[in-house]
Every structure is written in structure tokens, then in C-alpha cells.
Image (cartoon, rainbow, N blue to C red; front, side, top):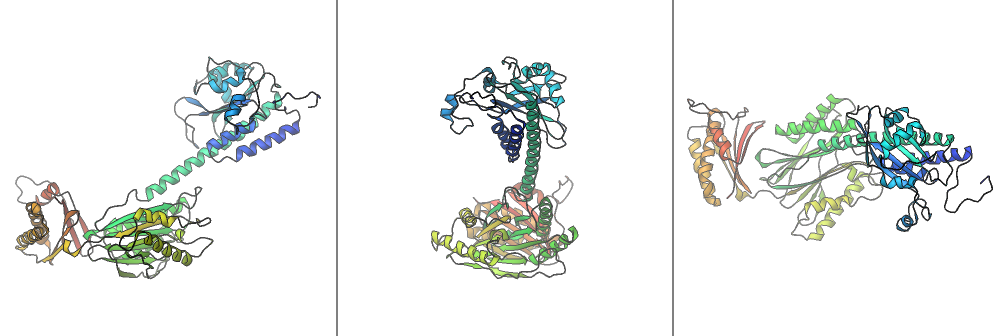
Length: 586
């Protein structure tokens, strides 16, 4: 110290020179700027000021904090966000990591404020606190404005600091005041001076701007998370004959939105479409394009188009969105009755099939060109899908990184699946959810360069003994023949309790089909956890449920189906339509 007097033990040295203040402000602002979220910035302010600049600090922030250009509604409410102070001997013993640990300092009224200040403070319009906050500049505690404002902020029953032992500094962001900070010193320490007001103003400004940016970043991250969440399916369907599991991992915490997606879409005939795609880029634009392509794929799947036709229409849609809209996609349709899968590829990594015995193979699927190239034909292949096998569809983020090429990653994935299957034995496939987790565990440091979408499908299939299929000529005798055939199938399956309901509903649906059909009508019964009946014809118009009048001779068939069946629906096909209903199995 320039006075030559020794500094009391446990008491920080005061900043007496302008150079000290400049170095302190520089170090403090760097510490505040290191914070990425709200709590880190507020903690940086507290740790930077205590005990070097003040012995205690109270930080108040608006509740709720306004975001961007939002205009707050209602009165301004300040909440005590954080306090910090030089600990006494008891605090030091219990918290050795606290700044200033080891100091033996008696708690003065100034420091006691940090433990007893009001949590919430409503700023009265036109009040003393509102005037100080509006003025933006820090003020001493013994100023007329602060003497009236501090009781409103700290609570009327709290003892106020005397002399220039406290500074009240408004925290002003880019557009508005977002809070206030109170810096406190003990009476045995040098009082704050005019230069300290400038220091407090610098700290308050940097903290407020950092908080503003953190709130904006938090809102953008929330929007990105919500956008990604709404773009991906909340839950996977439970189609007959197949079990599904999925995973999605963003590229990084700082880039939580991207263009990877997966989907599982039930199709007529108990089939299911499995889709995995990847739009190039990691931005809101990529996510928006992904959402449009996913919606298009769902619409095309509803038309029951072949996989290669779906990719062709997706390619046309991508070209309509822009010349630089590129994506890869894998589209597969699984038929549990035929135990077959049809796959078409648009520049996507090939799927991996894990067989029941533990053997895994990379399926040979024509690679195709990415979606958006235009003028390219897509080719589909039909492959066996044996019961107990697991198909894995994924995006390139799982197998490609700066440390390995895509084919090396695919081979590692195949080996990982085979090794996992060995743990459960040759007769039992590995649990689907655990298999997905195990696949993701193969990612090491540096392997997360891209988003990862993963869709796993376990093929259970439907046994031929649980399927009954007939073709009926479109004639008046078709409904009666359909009733007899359905009755015989139910007798064979031991479902006689459903005979009356099934005969009635089959008769109504087949009657509607043969009335307008020009080609043979198909009738199929499937016995799984439910009894499903499907009637197909060559008429594309879908039936509509309507309320028949008392004088109408018809129009009550679908009304009966709607009342008696657990579920029912109609799907348009490229060759006509299928009307189906389901009944619970006793």
C-alpha cells in the first residue's frame, strides 16, 4: 500500500490506481464473457467482483426476462437471482471452494443483506426504484435516489448501508432494463469513490448485454428443439408383424437442429413403410426442408405408391423447393404376410440386416442418386425378410466422420451388430431398444460430426396359418359366399364368438364393393392380436360415413361397421381401394 501501512489480515487490497482498475475491469469482463448461459454469466459477475471489488453482491433480474423485441406486459417484477459475499469462518469450513475461503470476517449489516433480502420486488411505476432504473447510471447508497429506492428493492425491514458503502447499478440490456446489482462493502474498508461508479457501470453493462444474448440464445435453442421435435414422430406406430425402435442424436449441443429424419408409416394390407432421410446442412433451413420432404413422403405413402415412385416424386418436390436442395433417402416397404421387403435408395448408406442366428449383412441395394439431382430413375429391389431378423436404417452420421470413411464405418456397424447378437444366443434376437443403445455406444471421440437418425425394425411376420384370402366375383351371390368363407375361417381359428359380428360386417362391406366393382373383389382375414378384415376393389372412391334417413333403403352399412368394429378405415390404392375393420380377439 502506498501509505506504507500494513493491510489487515484477511482483507483484500483496495484498488488505488487507474491501472489496477483497468486490469480488474478487463479481467472481470473476460470472466463474464466466458459464460454461455444465464447462470454462468451471473456467477461470473459475482465471482469477478467478490472480494476484489466488493465484499458482497446481490443480483436481481426481471421475472420473466423479456426476449428480443418482446414488449413485457404487466408491472416489472425483480427476482433475487444470486447473492455472493466473503464467507465467515463457518462458511469457509463448510465450503472450501468458495472465493475468499479462509477469511475470518464478522458479518456486518451490509453482508447480512445477502442472506435476508426479499426474493421478489415489484417495481412501482413512478416510484423511486423505477426512477433509478430508468436513469441507467449507478448511484451511491447515500444519494437521495438510492435512499428511497433501496428499501423498495431490499425490503422495508432491511437495514440500509450507511455512507458510500454500497452502489446500486441498473442492468440495462440492448433495449430495456433487465435487472439491478447491489455492490456492498464493510465499514472497515475504503468507501466507494467516483471511479468505482465507473467500474460498477462497466460491470453492469457487460453483464446485462451478456444476459441479453444468453436469453436470445436460449430462446433460439428452444425454438430449434421444438422444431426438431415436431419434425420427428413423437411415437412410433405398432403395426402388425413388426416391432420398431428409433434414436435421434444432434450433431452437437450447439447445433441441435438438422435435416435427418426417420418415419414408420402403416400401409394397407398390414404393411409398413420404413423411411430414413438426410437433408444436407445443419440449420433451420435444413430442418424446414426436411419437414416438407417428410410430409411429402407421408402423403405419397398414403397413396400406396411403389418405393421407386415415392423417391421419384420426392426428387421432383426437392427441385421445386430450390436448385440446391439435396437430400438422401432410403424407402422400404415390409410385407409381414409375404415376409418380403421392397427397398429403393436415393444416395443413402445401405441398410444392415441382422439375422436370427447372429449373422449380419449389408444389403445390396442400388445406390441411386440423391434427391434433388433430377432426371434420374430410381430402382427398387425385393428381398427376403425372415422372421426374427432385424433391419437397421440409419443416416451417415452413424458411420462416417473425419476419422473414418463411410465404408469403414459400415463394416464396424456390421461387426458390432454381429457381436451384440452373440450375447443373446442363436435362438433369441437381442432386445430392440438395447440394440439401438449398443449401436450408438460404438461412437468414439471425434465420431460425432453429423446428426444421427436410427430406425430399427424387428420382423415378426404373420404366419400363413393366420391368413385367409379369397377372390370374389362382383355378383349378387358374393356377400353370401363371403359370409360362409369367413365363418369357416373363424371355426378353424377357434373364434366362433366373433362369427355373428364378422358375418354382418363382411356382408355389408362386400355388398358395397360388388355394387360398383367391375373386377373381382378380394377378401382377406388376418388373425394376430386382433382380427382384421380387408376388402379390396377397383373403385378409387372412398366410402363416407353418413346418417341415413328413416325413408332410405340403404346407407347403413358403414354405420354398423363404425358401431361394431374397434377400428375401421379405407385406403386408396393405385388399383382401387381397401376397406378394412378390426375386432378384438376374445
